[in-house]
Image 1: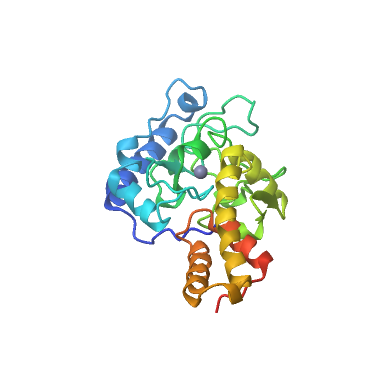
Image 2: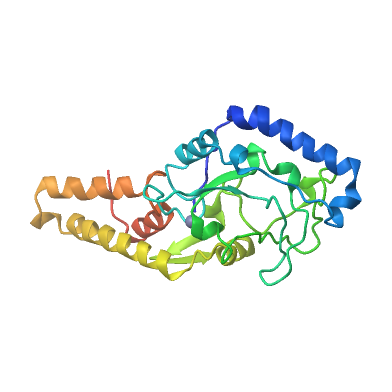
Length: 255
Ligand SMILES: [Zn+2]
């Protein structure tokens, strides 16, 4: 998980149609709050707006085709436009009932959207899970102050996850309780991710051996190995956070 730089330019579909729909939902709630809290009426948040190809491709490009949480590349997968704050309802804990309405006023809000893989976003992991630190006040309507919330889940578009999460080889570790909870919410320690990261680390290891045994390798082989390690640490590289931590631990000079 690395910091995401979401473009400042809001896709037109959101800034026009999305903004109008967000406003409509706010007005609808104010007109009859009881209907929504008693679930007589439920909000409808339309994928054709927030998940429009222009929105998805802008997020996808900003995130180098990778899931914003696990850094798995989505070149051969569809990925999905994910709401950081759940649009339809939220759970404080995985096994607790879904509390509705969710963050209906952020259904089409650019700063609430990320591009994510179907596993991280799926019901087994993040789904509607959005716990807050004990004592912080949850915003239940658009009239509440969102800044009073202290979510455990790290928003990679506003916080650098590297301050909270690091890697020891393929294994994900935490520095803070935000990191610990984020790993749990997203299942960043799941076996498939460990296996992907393990394979990457094997590739890195073979290059590190080449660099350390440079007397026995050609200059071209050493140069290729160094370039491989540089590339693996770019924000565009899959599982780059794990690569950065592994290469730092190996202590090889790449200049
Ligand atoms: Zn993911």
